[in-house]
Length: 298
Length: 98
Ligand SMILES: Cc1ncc(C[n+]2csc(CCOP(=O)(O)OP(=O)(O)O)c2C)c(N)n1
Ligand code: SF4
Ligand code: SF4
Ligand code: SF4
Ligand SMILES: [Mg+2]
Image (cartoon, rainbow over all chains, first blue to last red; front, top):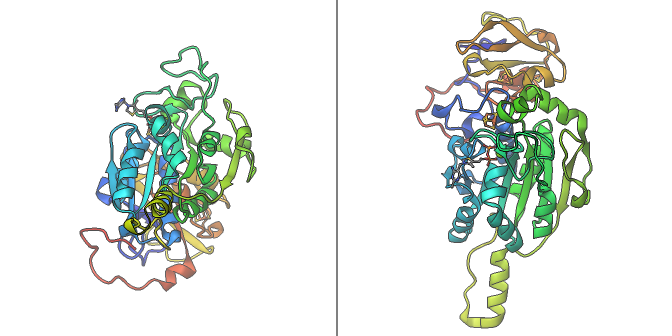
């Protein structure tokens, strides 16, 4: 059943939601809980893909395991749902085997920074030409709300019944320190800005990191009496301060604290492939044939 | 709001797949003109879904579409709607990309 004020136009035939062509429609409705923000980030990603002008046959999306990890399975792109924490090494292999591809890693905070933290650090250090989108809901959603390396100090989690006492990562600072060439943080309240960041990221060469804060009403919010998903998005609206070019040292998050959002880093550095070609070309001269192109031209 | 409605008010309107809405209220709370409200009715899953309570205020900006985590709703401007061609044939079995 559908509802509209434009009766001459049949939904799904004459007109459709702009996100639909990017989805595997047979899998909709998705599994995400009511008020979960992951779907909102997918809307932004779909709009960003349109705006990027990239050839969609040359875009691949890789996810790890988790609620966010399901994104790869819902997108109508070449998609890979890898093992827990291994989205980045998989993406690295994909990129190096077929340097024409624009490879996007889309995964959760637990997947990318707990079990997969080591891979993140090294891919950023090498300036591997991939874009990493982290949906940060401060918890392990899929497995029942365990403490994550991003959980702020204070809130309870199933594995922190008296509140979290572990110091969390400041993700933009980590990405910046490791050498990412583009670092931004937005929330699912900032749909337009998140879309623009994703578009810029898709057209950027090198290691791009985008953090999207997103509610997990079922576990994180309920356990900490923070209301529904929409209440968390209202918190993002009220407590976010846009500070582009902020020093990433200063953007750490506390429990329900002020949230500094913006584009923090945008710089140039040779990618891993460029560095290899340049170095081996210099050392081996004529004997070396440069490998691959490093960026999909738009 | 009924499907038979033909009078166009406002600059745009919404389309909604009622059955995939999960009643999260994102569209209602973040519509810039506050023209959506919850229905009194439930869908088959038991969720209240949005209705265009003040159609004269809808601009068709599609911010509801950008927010909706369930891909259920989207907005469209009447002037963009008019540009659309009549349907070319049945919906393809394998969805194509734009
Ligand atoms: C090797 C391995 N260890 C543990 C798990 C269990 N596991 C599944 S998802 C997950 C964490 C997911 O957290 P996050 O990446 O933040 O995703 P979210 O569900 O919050 O989106 C864990 C620990 C697993 N699937 N595989
Ligand atoms: S458990 Fe949390 S992160 Fe997972 S779908 Fe539900 S609300 Fe979203
Ligand atoms: S299209 Fe814009 S104005 Fe109309 S309901 Fe959606 S958000 Fe509101
Ligand atoms: S945002 Fe989508 S799922 Fe949420 S109430 Fe509106 S139409 Fe329903
Ligand atoms: Mg998580």
